[in-house]
Length: 54
Image (cartoon, rainbow, N blue to C red; front, side, top):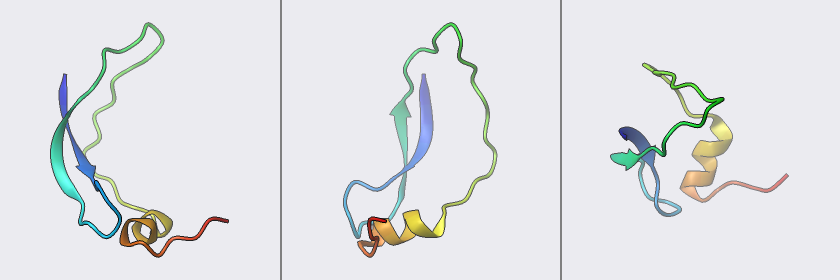
């Protein structure tokens, strides 16, 4: 199944909306439709190359 995802391929690169392949669901898994989301401050810093390991 194809889904859309926000992807950063390298540090400092902007997020891009891409179609990616979702593997088949397992017997104890469910598919949830997400209609809105955000990115946490730590992830945003990591994408920009300013993240630190804590």
